Image (cartoon, rainbow, N blue to C red; front, side, top):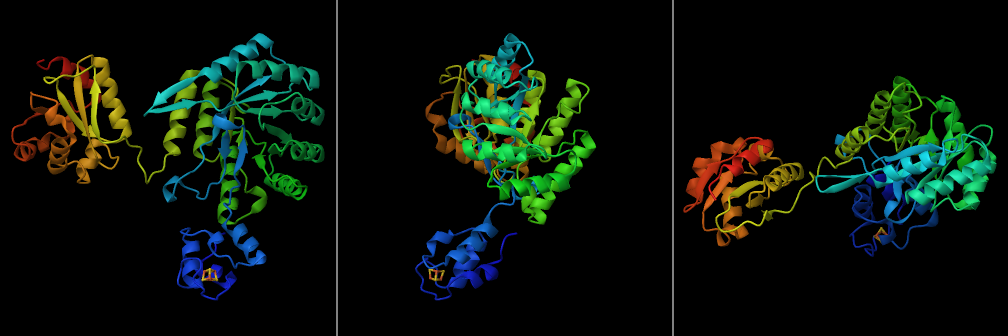
Length: 449
Ligand code: SF4
């Protein structure tokens, strides 16, 4: 639980020496509580107070990292129940599971396809994040062989899945990639798994059999045994039960500061599903609430794309709309007589418009006005896409130097601004374009060139 400024002040030296840059210890304490200062700014905090303050300021859901470099996955570190309370910080990793009982060619094909999958949305590349390799045969030699096939076909972080510590040890010894996630410790094998996790420095998943009490006890035993990076699996697979338990875990971690369950959660939506569609529904539910790693059993772009998009939307900071830089964008080599469109700098708006303009093949200038990342209608309603702001953009962005044909086209949604804009932009003709991006191609093709 976060400490108040007063509670922090009681742990400070109270000498008001000002070395931290604040006039008093109380001012420093208040700033620390508001997360506007670093504890290290005070050189006189005792070790005891430091430990208390650091533990109180630690995020309620522990940050767990696996994989390395560009493919590193970070999950946890969440501080709120609901996205609109602040934001969700670390988007859940999506993984595809293969088993060592599958033919090697099938594993190679599935893994290569999943690893190569990448789709662009609002200027970002969305991809799968990890491969889970399951030791379904329970044989260490088969496990290592399958692992070699996976490593040869994908450079993604690995989740090593086996209940047999000997198989996990064999995989680790065979070189299981950079910092894999070990899955899983349970009531029977947790001591051996804890030793392997400590020896390898890999995070460890802990699996219960549907009971949160069992999960908390196991997690507590493992942290006492020295394993700090844990990932939780409740063992519950049905939709309602999974939702209830994932919510309880998040609530206990955030509202009650219950440390044994203050870890990210791993889920297996395919295990409780009777079809690929059911698996997708469970995965979507778990993206929203509150999975940290989701292991899929099927890879199908028709399913993965909406899941990646959902994840992107939920894990975008609601206080910071995704936006592009205001300015002039060129499509299809525009010239002095090419049309000039204007729009806002909300990413989704920009990429929808840009995609249609580019596909039209018509040379076009696109002027993007700074609407603080709001879409056309929202920005207009909020007074951030007005005749004044549009006129200012047109006058200052330099488009007047690039065109002889002084015609600017407004989005159809704000047709009402055309009269005012004509007054603001003497010398320019204002036209009104389509309301929807999908109609832009037809509109552009009908323009005089
Ligand atoms: Fe107080 Fe430490 Fe700041 Fe000095 S440096 S005023 S002791 S908080």
